[in-house]
Image (cartoon, rainbow, N blue to C red; front, side, top):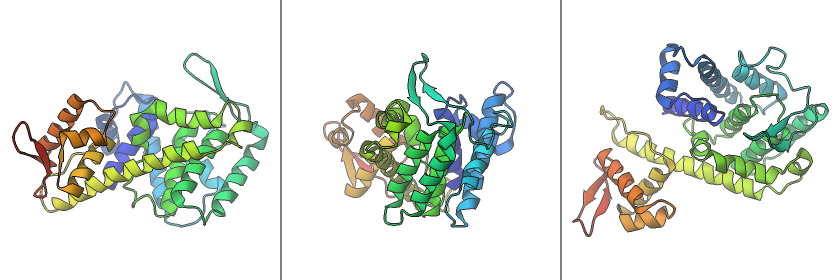
Length: 313
């Protein structure tokens, strides 16, 4: 499961930034290193992020708080071969603006002269946040680090890797099997909107903004990702010793399966209550797919169909 989680996290975090490789291509690159010839830059991004996650997995075992050295190391690994040497693993020395596709300015990051002190302040806060739930503290780390925007490029990937590290240090990464980034990738506009709406247009606003909307978004994503993992653990546990490996499920599938597991079955009407924003036709396809994949079994007639949790899977 950790291997599958790593492949998905590498794919999701790099895809958020525009990497065009699909998850099958990512798995191929990571598994055997076979070049895809036409995607050299994308392959470097993928391999680098995998190495960053390997660093995170080793680093979390120390149990020591995150340091500036860790931050620079993660960035150096992620951006090696993608940025000029003087920018890799070093805080930026120039100002940066975040713009959208039509070059409209969305956000002005803080001046380079205060980066060191802002990062130090964030790390000091993290080290003194023992009375704050680790998931809440991770949400603040994610938001504040991406708002500081300390590098010329690679800030998003570095932020997500550091969030992963923080959760791992506090035993909330479920032994490296939890994947948060797929939640962000599933709806990138919602991810960026959750950040930008709180940040405002400049760092001076971002640093004093109320974080409740972002924390709500982050914790919802965390819960959704845990539901996905819970279903996978349950299904894998039921087939241990066999040759069948369940397919990965997304957050919507996990919601449907969680309900079916808890109550023994789920109807189409119940599925509509659980996922009100999903059309009836799409829900029918989802339920059929979950039947085809062996998670559910159809019971009843056409007028009174239910989908029963397949405990024999």
